[in-house]
Image 1 (tube, rainbow, N blue to C red):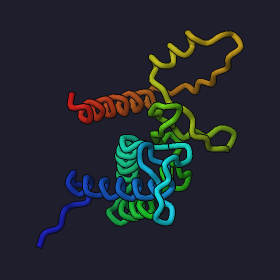
Image 2: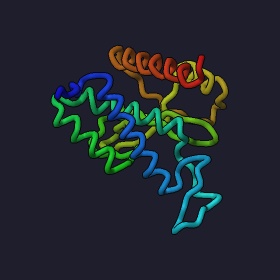
Image 3: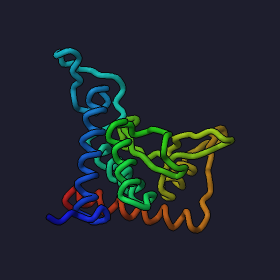
Length: 178
């Protein structure tokens, strides 16, 4: 009987699916998925709390989280430990066992928004992450009284950012059958 290598696409795809199912189940219980009614003791609640996720953002978060777990692991044991923590916690925006620069998606103000984990004055914050084009448009629309904080990236960080952007653009095309 042969086993599948933990670094193979097939194995990682299965693990991402498990993570996605766990996130979905946990968020469904909390009533945090847009368009999915929450059940409380057998009764369906029509208007749950403020939504934080959609089915699409859950899928994108599972993809990102699995990628982070894989690239920060040096062995199958370490990878599976991180994966099991993600599956059992079911927490998308946890600050435990994540590194500054990690990204997550959420549903905010009727749109899917990307957040990035930043550390400012020894405090960690989830901040909006945007494309350069979006940033330019925002600055153009701002009045003199508006304030915006911009955190510059170094060349290496910028290259990583562009790679992630291209990756998600390709995934977005796949999702839309384009």
